[in-house]
Length: 629
Image 1: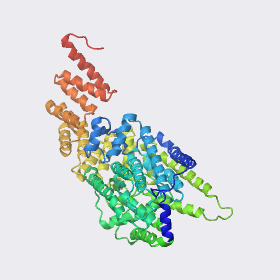
Image 2: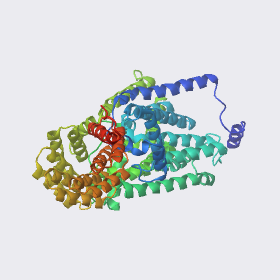
Image 3: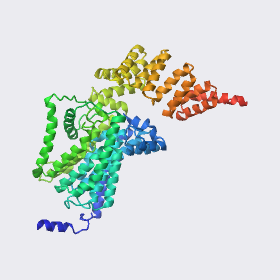
Image 4: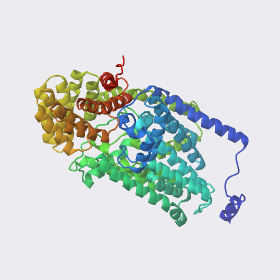
């Protein structure tokens, strides 16, 4: 009888929802939302002073698809036109490029805004679920330093954008139930409009980053937590979400293998060992965010080492223990632990992703997965704070303020690593001296800045750590050639070719060295091999054309310059070089057009400006015009 009377009382309002909040409650909620957004903005203010770092060139500065309306179409319709098929993420970057060009502050400001929006939506979801400490959990998420990598790194726009859309989808779906999820066990979707909005936001989240494919499963866990059951109607309503998530996740796995090159020779058992260790790594960094770094040491996985099985066994035991203890502890801890495991599953090494080449874990992998654990920890603290306190015990508000201050301070410090590419790699090496990737990237950055001796030291260290990496051999060859040590450089290029016979870049770089040494026929042979291995290699076409032009083979040179420009129309050197050959052939009007295009693309191109003046004068002379001065 009691249960029946309770249900009737809830049915007083037509929707079954709690009565609307008072205007005073609205004001308090508005203030709480503004404070949350202000905290996120304040914590990440230093990020706006930073520049572009690793992968930001591929995503923004060198990404031709961001520059034109045609590029926007390519983002959506041409897989491989951009580094990953996350078309909504690259559309947002396309819009940024129209607004800011290549100024990094605008991109970072958008990342910070999206992170603040994600934190706000996290609070709204937890509040709708009536979770104790909902606002504090959202504030911890907003300020936790483990999320700096997702916010301060422009290339991780996909994380903050998909996070905002995914939380929006979750909030809308809960609203579509028309009541708190535990109000009526097995309640059907009551608002078709809210349901459609949730599905649309979920599709957007997937198109921003498909790691959000786990959200429908997390939602089922939420419903189980609140109701102690998942009704058939719940499963039926989530079928479109599950199908859409699985489909786009399959596309991402295919893209990672085919276009990104993520395929590692790991046995199923080794993957289980990696996953078990990662399941403990992420909660540990949440609880104690010390020495966070861009590249963590890559674990040595040995299926023959008994102690490595402790991690997956302990993880399985912890999950099973939380489930078995649900009668004593409630279903909340079990739901939170399971939701974390589900959300982090795509990054556990069970499927191949490119960064696994360098490390099995990364801070940005747990951007969304951290939410259930943060919510669980804060709810437990709120529950404990509700108990009578001993005299002298710090007030909960004071303890919460101290926690947020500590997290905000750590975030400010961590953002400093993202000031520039150089600061990022130096910070990484300070915490992980064996990071091959950091040595290589810092070395090539120093090389571009003309600091070849320093570059050699880092690349030499990388080669000692990974002697069979053909790219390191090739990069070191470039530096040695710059230092005038041609014999050593030639040996590095030859070793790179031996290690990777199908790689075009070592052939191109060896050919450049041979051309510089006055060996054009050998150079032409290696350039031609680079073009054969990769017909879309614009630099190799241009370089081969230069050697052919010097040998008097103008027609062949023109064909390769044109091939380079078909691949990359925004290649100023190829435009200029083609102009020089055309001028030599007496085709001055065509040469003028090429020089003008080179100058349009690179206004400070002095050689093109001088050649344009000369060609324009030569064109004008037959008509009796005075040459320009």
